[in-house]
Length: 451
Image (cartoon, rainbow, N blue to C red):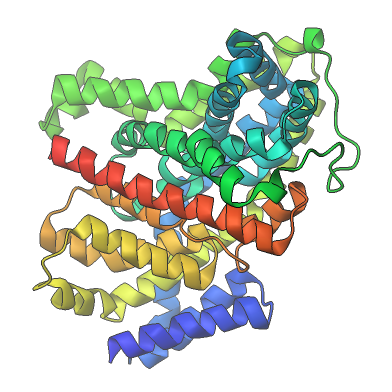
């Protein structure tokens, strides 16, 4: 019975988002109420369940997402991202342009949301393609592969951070494992896939001299932008903080949780927490990309305000996904899944990936697919004693599979790269699926090594 209600709920959610064009957050909350009623929950408790789901997820996430968006905007507006891209391209040379684009996009993707990174990097990469005399897609595919990979696997990006919080996984551990998984994944889904795409969709790799989707593009003089060292340090500050603290905890405190609460260990635990790491990183960014660049506090304040506007709806969507997740848990769907998979001889990581893939195909949004999958996977994790960090990465891999017409990223890619819908399906949809499958394989291999 629970699965029938869940299937109907997902169908209703899909209908509301795609056909009715209802706002995703409103659709999620509406569906959550209907599913709660369908599962037989006491109507008196439904509002509390939804509030509980939103409250449990938003405490840490609101700070991490908000500060992350602020850091990204400061680095972008100061020209730090432009400096990083140009320096790496100059270092690798024209013969290794794809590698340069991958490294630059990977670094920038760690500190910026996919949409922001795409808008920022596309004009830069396009101008490089013009100078080098190569098709835009030849450099563009490695760029989007790197950006998409970081969004799937690496905190403090929204989806992996939200899922890690929902599954009570150590975010620093997710970050370290995520980097290990992301590197081979982006190589396969980026430069290697580009060679394959050139063979089966050569018409999409035509030489372009302009991008219709972009109007006036902000230009930087390289000498007026921040230095490479301070730009890359600012972008990677949260990663460095959380990564260093996690390594310290693994080496020094190990499994002794009580040891982490006292003395110097307590300070390391504090600076490694996402909230404190992002706070310190933001304060450093205000100085390095603001005050140090002779920008006034008003200019800095305006940039911070604008950055929050860009993530407001994303936060609402994730909170809606959390509410839906809580309804599934309180309504007994989680227990039903636990009983269903009890006799299934299949890795919980593969099951988590499959659940995320189905939700991604049905709902479009990677964030919604991730959060809904996290709710369904929680009882599975408890029953199988699966590694929560590995489950986060498996869900992340599944959440990016088979992007198609119900995903905003599909249309952004089509518009920015000036492709037809058929070409976008042949290239973008396949690229995301390759990324998903390769990511899962890497997670399974890493899990076999560390567990």
